[in-house]
Length: 195
Image (cartoon, rainbow, N blue to C red):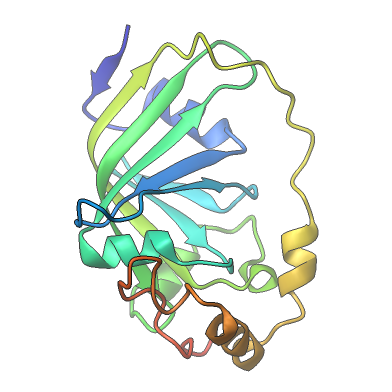
């Protein structure tokens, strides 16, 4: 049976931090807008900042739907499931915001991710999520699957980019500066990287 938690701590925090994969779900306010669901991985790119705040590094990709939705309305749900060990699913429902590279908070937030080299992945923003509801559920139907390792393809692809070429790459993509539904996405050109 599911349970609601007042904070992310203890066993719950340990479970979240041990998962190599999580998912984000966002949507625009428009009733006919596109719901977005994204997998997030890469060890070291997620951090629990305090008992009600988490953050993850937003890396280069082919769209910026999550950023666009957060800029419009802030609603986000994060979900982790146990593919190994005892069954469990944890969801954090809350309000999120993208902290861009020119935000005064960016450098301090980035220091919370010491185990990953962000410049190798085309870091666009840090998404900070303030939890409003934290719940778990059984996860009995989630299959057992083995985690082997992170793929190195993302780092190999984007490590050769600098700020100018990364901005050019994003400018060529149809849904980076503007979402599928026409919402403002990633501000371009990217502010210079300080990492």
